[in-house]
Image 1 (tube, helix red, strand yellow):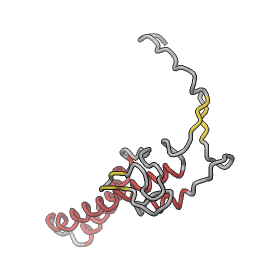
Image 2 (cartoon, rainbow, N blue to C red):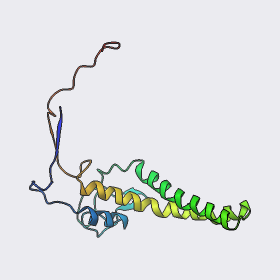
Image 3 (tube, rainbow, N blue to C red):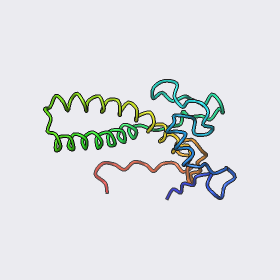
Image 4 (cartoon, rainbow, N blue to C red):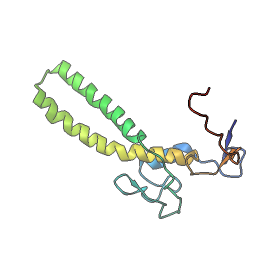
Length: 152
């Protein structure tokens, strides 16, 4: 059995990182450590390190979570708005398209970097994916030999 222990908790020499402060900084697309410089050098392209404090940011593993959360939030707002408008006014389809397509695009483009920034900041605050030291008990044990196909 492998035991994983994160270094940096309450009983460690490393200071604890405030998750709420980091999340707010990430939402503002700033470095989660210092909050001074931009987290991105281009739209959704994360800096390898913060220019102000030098905190390495290349460890981040946001992957598919930011687009998922963006679609979840945007979809609920837009579909709810469409249903409410349809029930209240019953406009033709072209009116829905003129109103809701721009809202959908703008909302998605605005939310995506903020959600990604908050997720990266959350990873930083919890010392996930290389943002902190990780001790794995039994890491020096070689992996088990693969079993032949068909054996139980």
